[in-house]
Length: 154
Image (cartoon, rainbow, N blue to C red; front, side, top):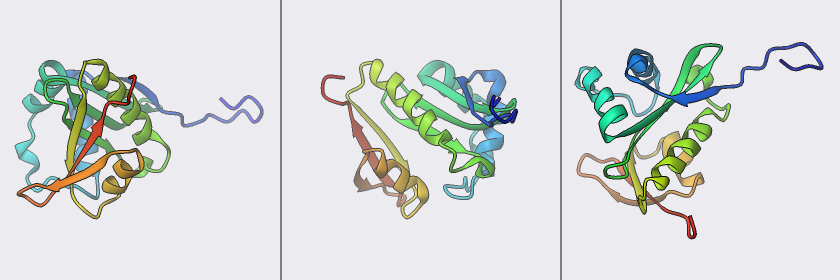
């Protein structure tokens, strides 16, 4: 609550995602306008569980109990598997907050370099570049690969 005006603020609450959240995570994933899955059926419930429980960890952002964004990072190879925000909640710092908690955790796992791919010419590409990710190569399927080095002394 904003004590001065008695107005509830829509501040996201971040927490670790679990298998019980997969349906909400997938709803957000399917809502995006860029980096749209060409075949959504290819990303299964089991894929989410694999990434959340065995290969890495995920976080979600909730506003008033509604999941509005999520991020999943893999500890086994440093890949950012997902970072998505529901379009109705973009531009509020949710993606940046999810990015920060995920990247901090990934580097704490001993990884020296993180990587991800995204469609070129998108807001996601500009988002990662602003956060210090370095564009490297284009993948065989035309996506832009980005890498982020562990900060010195970190």
